[in-house]
Image (cartoon, rainbow, N blue to C red; front, top):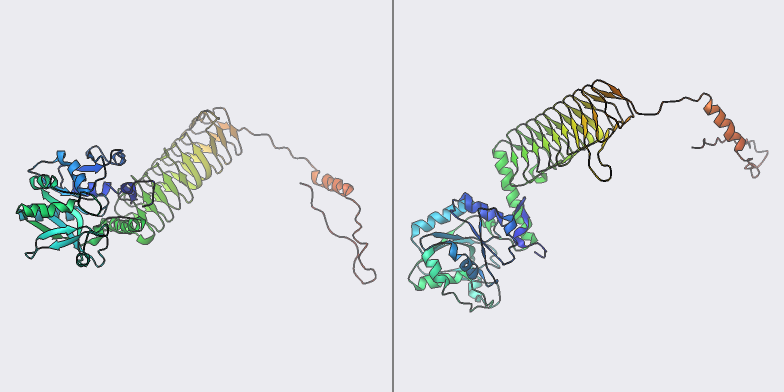
Amino acid sequence: MRSATPKLLHEVCGRAMIAWPVAAARAAGAAKVVVVEGPERPLQASLDDGVTVAVQQEPRGTADAVRAAADHFGPGDMVIVLNGDHPLITPATLAGLAEAHARSGAAATLATAVLDDPSGYGRVVRAPDGTVERVVETKAPGDATELELRIREISTGIYAFEGAALIGALDEVRSDNAQGELYLPDVVPIMRAHERSVLAHEIDDASELGVNDRVGLAAVRAVAQRRIHERHMLAGVTIVDPATTVIDVDVQIGPDTVIAPFTSLHGATEIGGGATIGPLSTVIDTRVGARATVVHSYLTGADVGDRVSVGPFAYLRPGAVLREGSKAGAFVEIKNSDIGAGAKVPHLSYIGDTDIGERTNIGAGTITANYDGKNKNRTSIGAGAFVSVDTMFVAPVSLGDGAYTGAGSVITDDVPPGALGIARARQKNIEGYGERRNQRDSASRPADDSDKNVPQGNGSDSSDTRESAPSP
């Protein structure tokens, strides 16, 4: 991956790669999920409390990794082994493997696939009776013969084992290979030597294979995104242009919602039914209510109620709560504030650390100055209030229910309910100012000798008729 981030922590549609096979195993009915990782435990923070972590002290190969988890399963268990870098593995594939293994009575059942280009994968060598004789690794030169490299059936790295057979075979695995590692596929000939059969269960979808680099990561993400889109569309969501739409795996969307082009929905976002999101909107960890609209805006950590209108060009930051029927219009930023039902912040305003009551109207250019250099202070604006344009509230301050502000005011003191707060210098008109200024400018203008080089007697007007602009 050429990354400081461990491969299994790279995200696929909003979920760490390791969390995908864990989720698939649970959905397939696994009674216990064990993740094997190194002693530094980099994956543990991305795993929930229901996952058991087993530590492989040294990276000595896949058989050693399974051996590290051996304390967590017993002889009578069916043990399915997955690779953590197979994010597209589906519950249906795992359930199918488990059912095939349970019916067979074999010691092991391998999930295999036939690829046009099997490069890099272990090859499945069949016995004359069709059972699996062995799996030949191809990681390093010398692991496989030229003939074995021509085999197109590969091992996916997914196995179903009888617990007792697996425990016994792990003790007999040796590291006599080019890598000097303990390979899990080496349990196959060991089980056959004990006169136990090993079968193959072919899967049809080769996209369920692993990720080895960022090219593979992009390919896997594309498949995962298509599956997410299809799931939502089949549930009644309109995605106008899936090719320009990004939706994370845990996003929830209600029926009859329309997702317009160039929209991205991330994290734990929840969208109610009948909403319209986009175009050109990003929504992160935000709840959007039923029949709400979000147009050309950026929302993160917000709570948007039913029938709320957001945008265009709005920015809702964490802690922004917009109650039912409220509005955050063009070029409005709201942070850590509660906007009451039916209240409107139509345009060009910053609302931070503020409580606004129901049905209040906030005029254009309103700012709640919430930071005094040390602390964040709150502003309270009551219900049914009318805030005129270009009002600045210097928190902590309050405007009562039904109160007003005069346009261009800087409110530093509380305004009682029903009152009008005005805080601005009185206008003064100076009569005749323009004429006196023009006279002053003319008197101070230097003599213009620009006509010295103008030819005379050619019929042209040699006078300078240019007017100078007034000083600022």
